[in-house]
Length: 212
Image (cartoon, rainbow, N blue to C red):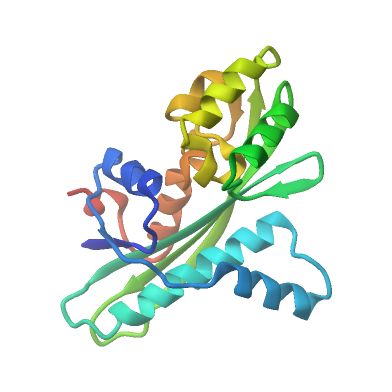
């Protein structure tokens, strides 16, 4: 049973590898901003974080599943995911700039936010129409209240927080600044493994059959 990760995220790839799965990877080539904007225009307002991450996860997985459905050699699962961090009523994606990452860390210091993660899994098999299972997962993340401005500056200078949802990691340099995670810890890394396992089962696939 093969697995294709519809993402170029190093964190999601590492997560699957640590779980015993060696996936193919394909870029979904999805304009996330355009997808989100179209959904907001249709609704007349921005989507709640849980709805938005699921929408984007489904768009990514569907794009790759469509490609692999024409590949007679692929028989397995396509996994798509998306994450966003909500704090104090605001939703944060990737900060991209040092200034924005610094501002966020000053706000997150001593606070608790929610990491929302959307999951879409497609069962793709030769000669069959792809079928999908979806779910969202959440994890509450609490940050230390004694993080100094110097520590924030050093962390931002490392470059790590600039290109990750919420401007933090739990499994690398940022982990020392996090005091508590309530929920599946892998959700904070990029995908909830327990959720992916459940979705695979819904599609008739046993998790251990995905091990390399």
